[in-house]
Length: 128
Image (cartoon, rainbow, N blue to C red; front, side, top):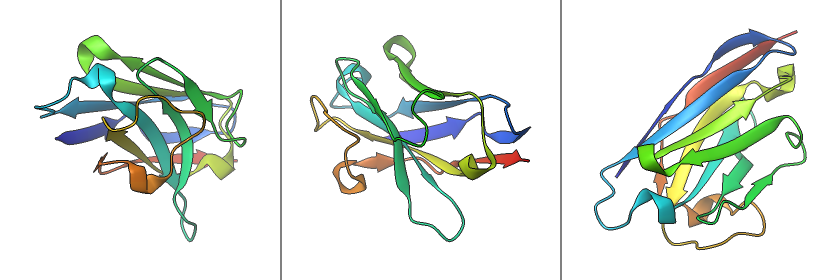
């Protein structure tokens, strides 16, 4: 299976971007049962979880983005979105989409090791 992100770019502080991630090649499980997430990695830092959403639509966010970012899914289009508002320079990072059909429901953002598939990433740059 394959994940392809899109929607990254460069914006000024306070701007908005909408990231998308399309899942394809998922032969054994339909998209609607997948747990999906967004991670990000800034230069010189470890990759961190940003937001996650499970098959029931339960969504969780890191404290850094809560209230500014919204994760959503379009099961008909096999697509995950991340609406990012009021962007800050510290949001600058490579953003990665992650997916797994093995987690039914979540109470927090699952750790990286629980996700089976990863996208190549899309760069988000926020200038002051």
